[in-house]
Length: 152
Image 1 (cartoon, one colour):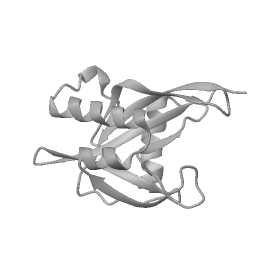
Image 2: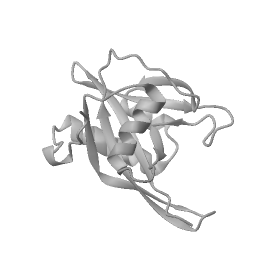
Image 3: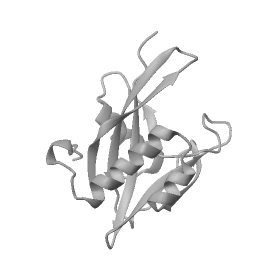
Image 4: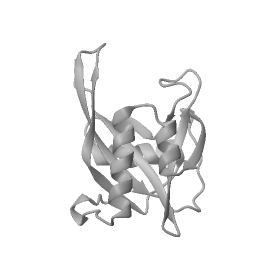
């Protein structure tokens, strides 16, 4: 079986130094039905992980980030039904807060949340950890230039 290649992407907006995180409720009949999640998706053949993150953001929301960067950690977990340990690269994307969001069929709704409210909504422990790390890097102004992803 081919290796599963996935990405996680944590969209956020800054308004007067306040950070809000964009989460999406998975649509009925979809994997993770009813769960609030960040953007996740599969990497296509010939696509880099960061290209997949940009594509998934566009496909799922029609948004284009002002800034996208690699979170210096991965979402790691064991998937029993494939007997696979997954290591999923994580990205953050700063969104213009006034941008319109058009959801695809994978989601039934979206909302902006404070860090604590977002953590309360997200079920997966590794995603909660990555969200806290993302918030820490943003608030401490420690996003390294080397982590920036080209978005033009």
